[in-house]
Image (cartoon, rainbow, N blue to C red):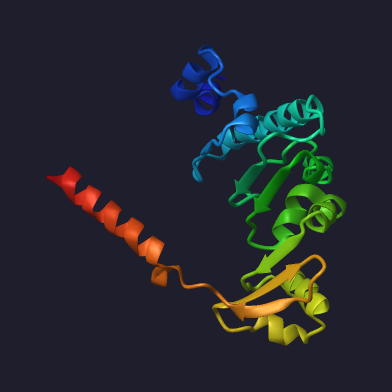
Length: 208
């Protein structure tokens, strides 16, 4: 038992539990704020705590929105969930995502495949989640289920989707015809080059 407790309740987590709450969910909806939440890919035991945080955050934001005159958040909140289907299930997420828009909450879900999402949330809930997304960006892959879905949406041959060249992107947005284009080359972006130069200079300064 001690081994399990030490594995899940790490010294950092025990310290966090013992301190006063440091996150004001009201601030997220009233001030421009950026909050980063990171987990270890090699320690999945902690994923459940992050998903508990997500569930609590959505619940609190809904309650804050309900108290507003227009029943929506004063400042829109956008959540970017990288590797969304890697952690454990977020409580009530299929129900939450269906009412995000009216509360001025939006979410970007980054997934390897639809099969990955289905293995986490089940067939019915995974379809519900996908159907509540206004935009669907497909970057290619080897998952047959996802490729079949995209081919049907594009009215294209399955092999054209499954064996599409690397760098080809499919953008499907509600109310518009699908767009097949090339992936944006961020390395040629002026702002990206400027940021990387600054980071490189800062890194050299720290080495000195």
